[in-house]
Image 1 (cartoon, helix red, strand yellow):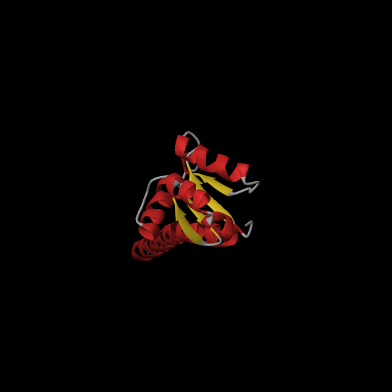
Image 2: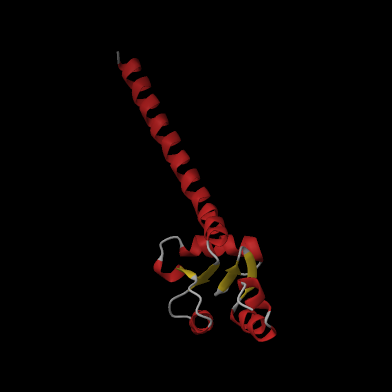
Length: 128
């Protein structure tokens, strides 16, 4: 009887381990999916940190253009570091802000400013 009891416990333990591993895999896959969904489901997406002056400048630029970006404040999320790692893999930078317009990577705050001054951003937004 003891042997059967131990094998039952072993099966339950193995089931818990497999379920935990699957849960971790699904959770880790959800961060890249969230990033991709954010980029491609929003006209303007900004990955930001709430205290960052460059991020504030980027948000102000869009406000002046009467555009409302979808903003992900990485410092206010439990998965912010993971999102930053996904951005590093995706665009080669982990700095903020990282700005996307119509699914296209614009870059950071300085890149955004240059795109506005050249008129390129307005073309991408369809406001020129």
